[in-house]
Length: 192
Length: 192
DNA sequence: AGAAGTAATGTAATATTATTACATATCATT
DNA sequence: AATGATATGTAATAATATTACATTACTTCT
Ligand SMILES: [Zn+2]
Ligand SMILES: [Zn+2]
Ligand SMILES: [Zn+2]
Ligand SMILES: [Zn+2]
Image (cartoon, rainbow over all chains, first blue to last red; front, side, top):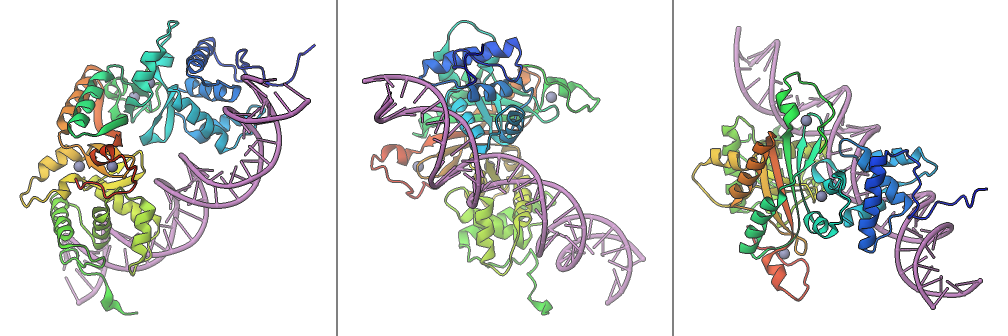
């Protein structure tokens, strides 16, 4: 018989949204990452992260809310914002200020079984850089960010400004959209 | 109704808010700048810009709305957002995405009788960089931005990304707030 | 000056994003 | 099982921004 009907413990995640194997691996990885930081990856947070990971473009908080409603739960705004806050604090997602929307941290997208949580934290927790395509909506997190950050650190140093976080958002046209004269809108953005 | 009480033409600005001589000079300069770009600096837009220039920290749209109500007019949100859009398009103000608030372009703050409108446009219209103090709320527009922009242009070039605009927002503590151990909040931010 | 066309503003309603405050439930530890 | 800390549920509201349409003001041309 069924053991219990309550949600399984975070170590044995459910899969109410039918996330792909790839995303489930990423979710598992994320769970390990925030466990290292003393955070608890609950089912709620896992589902929200899974939905952000599943999207091909940045997702808004209320989009996520709608998607979560299709499950058994009927969450309200605070639910989703709390989950997003948690994921932000642990560097698992980023907020695109210009879009009021959220993307997974690119370090989660690139498969890596090896643990470089420290690198990840240092690089992404409090700063992130993005290329945002106005045509297809795709967002790319800049990988060679250190150069940008170094310049910013240098400027802050000169001005005696204590940097706590930084965001860089470049808007324009991605490679595909720049070269497509068809004016097509909404093609699948190139995966990061 | 009395038809004689209408607002004066934009070439003869009124001063319903008692802006200082300094700010009025900046407003006049701004008027010349957007005239060069074929824009009309109306009384409404002038007042909004004056209020943004008068503030020591970024101002929100609804803050401006409240301040405008104290005059004869009773504006609604579209009024203020249209004025802000105009000022943004002409590079006279910037929007701080992280704060959903607006600051004057620093080039307007630094007195300069000489006309370098082209420089101004190139430098600020579609990109801006800020240091935002979490303690006092002061915002500084980074002057040596070209270095940051160059790095970004370089990265975009490598990725075949067509840059149309860029924003850099660094949050932390300004020089004054870094050095003041008193924990005082709200001291007058150092003018840019 | 008068008419016509364009640009700017007024107004009401609504949409979108986010937070506060307080109650309840779950988890970890003893 | 009792406890305290963490997480979630719920209702109400705040803060930011846009849509659609009516009106007014300005510019240009006769
Ligand atoms: Zn990241
Ligand atoms: Zn694109
Ligand atoms: Zn500027
Ligand atoms: Zn400060």
